[in-house]
Length: 213
Image 1 (tube, rainbow, N blue to C red):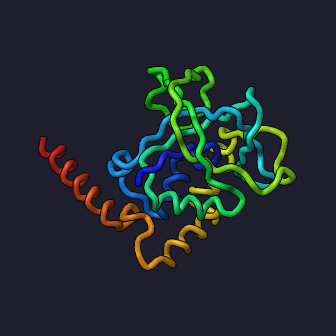
Image 2: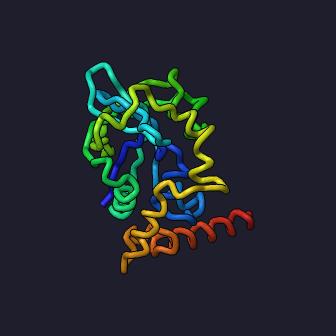
Image 3: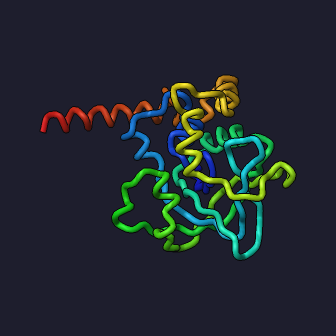
């Protein structure tokens, strides 16, 4: 089954999302582009907050004037969502919501994810799409009133999550859960999974053809 999810925090950063759903050794860029589609989107009637003493944010239902900008990811499998559930833990609940796609200007079509998600002048809304999102259920007392800043996370915090000096940051919980499964919980999408291996073979053949041209 294919899933569509809206991400508004650390998972907007492609390296963090890849680390969660594909483990420490993600497939090649060719395979990744085949599996997932990532687009900017807007979630209305919710508000994003900093979580106290944490790098990640949370969202709560709010009034008609509030909105949260993030990324809409399509092509996620049951296994991917299983990994994401483990990563988010008991602090969040996965719910279905309606989000609106944001149309990008031509000059922004191939920018990095941080630019795509935070460029306010590119805020042109399209049609509504149903998606799954992780909503905070651990209590307002653990949240700061101010907005969480994705740009600050990318510049100041993300290297702790996916850099050379990476800390656990919840990835170990996912890795341990995967290791405890007798069968591949990603449905063949994880590293060395059957689907990934087939796509890798296709990618290798394409590379050889390109070299021969």
